[in-house]
Length: 388
Image (cartoon, rainbow, N blue to C red; front, side, top):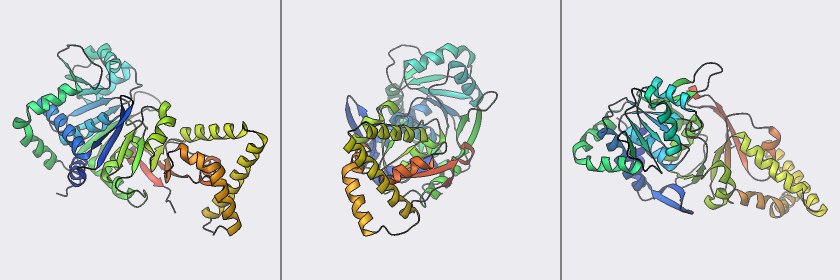
């Protein structure tokens, strides 16, 4: 079989190719920490072995109930490596919805972020007869025999490596493209959430097609803040591995403004609401300046829109207009670009329509926003703007 025709084999091929290069970045103790691909691979290996030691069989379901963080992705690929199916659960879900998904997907092991998420599981545990263990990523200090810490799961994997490493290798090698990789539960208009089945082949086809639209290079940095329980965020995560990118995890959506200039991403994926809030903030700031500052701001925006229209029509920018744009960039747009880190080449918007006015405003300022459309059932992208 090919070395990258399943998500698990894709991951291990990346670890082999890019071992010492940066793979993940996250804030820890107020400072950004970087893990190389080889280090992430070691964590994934330990967690996968830990899942085998817990008795997880091929094609069994393991749930993840957490905000987007490095351990979410590590767990995802450990589950794939162990031959399992990842079941994402939104961290905002109440106990009754968690119970429904755990039972419907037949989750045997559930990985949760913290004691607050564990408390929701405990509230309905008696109604989830098939759930055998819960793993808490951070903050758990209890002694319940059915609850492990993240470090405890990794330690279990290390302790059983000699006994289970052959089985793990067999599961990675034996995975088939048509195997189910994940079941994503989406909110229906009526009734409980509906599980959408996605195979390894579905995701690999999407990643292969992204090569024609996503203009990124190995080593590029992207800042991930979308929920990994949603297929859009998951695709961004998978693309980071497929393309050899450095995935930086935002502390939270509320800290995005601080994290962007710290991480300095080359691209980012978002939903329209984030672009709308940034746009509203910029317009409010432009309106709050002195009369001279307001005049310069609106002049720069008008110049930028003129340039944007010409670029969209694939027409050359006349010399005088180009000179005006360079002045506008220096006086206004460079500050906007600096807020995104100063090296953002493009952004991707999906999940809902982005208004033409806002897309053109960002394009006028030198930030290209590409839009995608899709469904969870299409894994998730169906159409996507090309950069040209």
